[in-house]
Length: 148
Length: 148
DNA sequence: CCTATTTCCTACTAAGTCAATCGGAAATCC
DNA sequence: GGATTTCCGATTGACTTAGTAGGAAATAGG
Image (cartoon, rainbow over all chains, first blue to last red; front, side, top):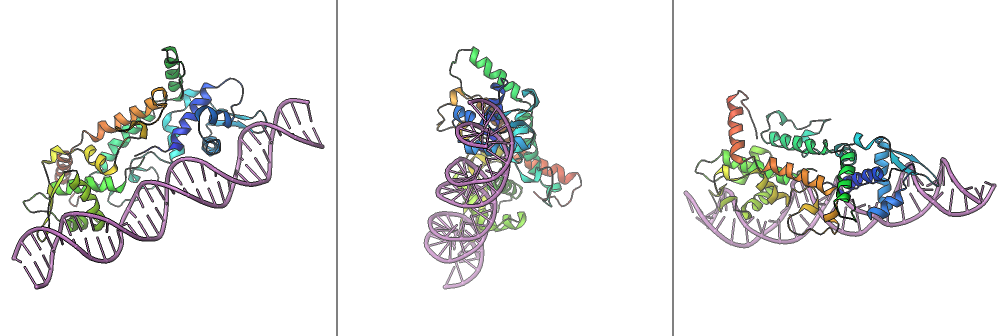
């Protein structure tokens, strides 16, 4: 039941981009340094975000990344689904192929469905903008060296 | 974010034991046959339930397993925690050692905490007795070959 | 045009987890 | 004593995770 580093880092990347949204493109190395994550690994994760259309990029010197839209348009759920593949707690609940032949008479499935709904309800109701706001609240309330 | 077969099978085993609670001890092979799961694999899973004190056993011929207490005493959460190890979505939230040095200033951690709470809220509020009841409801309402 | 920078792309890997399988010892019933 | 059944530990093949490694292509500035 763990969220992988891929998913967690992806959220961190999106938040980092939202917080450093000053005209300039943000390069992977800067995010990696700020968040203390392997730059090469981050490249792969950002590639997913790029393919998903969540970030825009410019190559070459002075290049980098920025969010493709307002932070309020991106939920944590969207980001996790792209990077984790699926966040359903059991494969039976995955949207595409429901392969389990006893699905329609499966007793415990109802529990996993409830669980899935609860999970989605959380991650689909937190946006990157919410995280930015919380971050600013935290800055105001005294903690002066807040990291993401 | 998947629950492993270990956790899912463990819930199925507990429910199966609750449904076949007629004086006799239930043997692993019967559960395995009913649920179409490898008996040898089930042995390992039941061993965890045994160590956790959730089932009682008798060895030898006519031996087997039964629940150690009323079905209402066992929540899905209890069972999953024993078999999955932990159901926290990130390691930082694990009860014992909180090793991440930036935990107290971690922005995204709040989201994972919310997620964890939502997950716990579901699994800690469904007991094996609830599943038995639902099963009986389903039997009444016409589906005649209901499996677990 | 040259060079430094930065994204982009693909392949590889070491370690760990998952879902079993296998073989046999110990206990219990008839 | 023999059949049954739990108990215990070792092994395995496939897969996933969390990276590393190397280099091609694009761009800015000089």
